[in-house]
Length: 251
Image 1 (cartoon, one colour):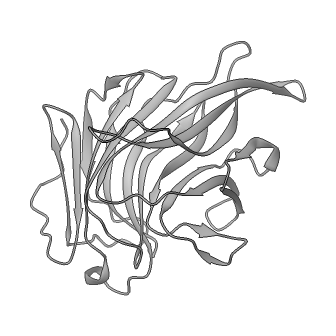
Image 2 (cartoon, helix red, strand yellow):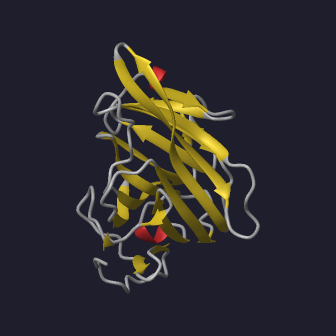
Image 3 (cartoon, rainbow, N blue to C red):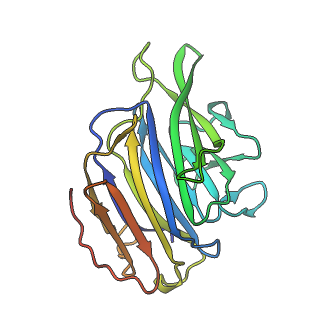
C-alpha cells in the first residue's frame, strides 16, 4: 500500500469556477480499512491538487487516524500561509508523497447522499503575486439534505495570468485507493458508492473508466466500476465478493 484500484477520467473540456460532486454512499465501509475516494486529482490554474473522502483521516498532531472525513491538498506550496483551517479542522505538511500542504476535517459520512463542493472563495495578493482561495465543503443532499455545509478548509492558488481569476482545470481523475489496514485484497472493506460530477452546474459530458496497476504493478481483482451513460453517474464497488464485471470503457 498505497494501491490505486479504480479510476474514472473526467471529460470536462473547459475550466470552471466551481466543481461539485453528488456522492451517494450505498454501503458504508466503516473505518477498519483506510480507503480514499479522491473525487478529483487534477489542478487549479496549473497547480496540482486532490481532494475527497477518507474512511480514517490521519491527524499528524494526534499521531493516528481520527475517523471519517475529507482532505484537500496541493503540491505547489509548502507554506502555511497558503492554507486556511476550518473550525474543528487541522492541516498537514508532508513529504511522503512529494512536498505538499493540505487541510483536513472530520465528517461522519455514512449511507446517504452528499454534495461536495470546490469553489473559488475570494482573491488575495502577496509578494507581488495574485492568488485565489478555493474552499472545500460537504453537505447532506437529497430529500433530507439542504442543511448547512461543513467547511473542510481552504487552499490558496496562484493565478496563471494577472487579472484573471484562477479556475479548476478540465480533465483530472477520480480514483479509489486503499492506503492502510489491509494485508490482502480480500481484507478491503466493502464500499458501494456512486458519484456524479458537475462543473458550474453542468454534468460531466464524457469520461473513461480504468482498472489501474499503480503503483505496484498489480490490479485489484475484487472491484468494479461502471458508468450510467444517460446520467454520467459513476458506480464503484469494492469487496471480497465483488467481481470485475464491467470492462474499461469510454463514454
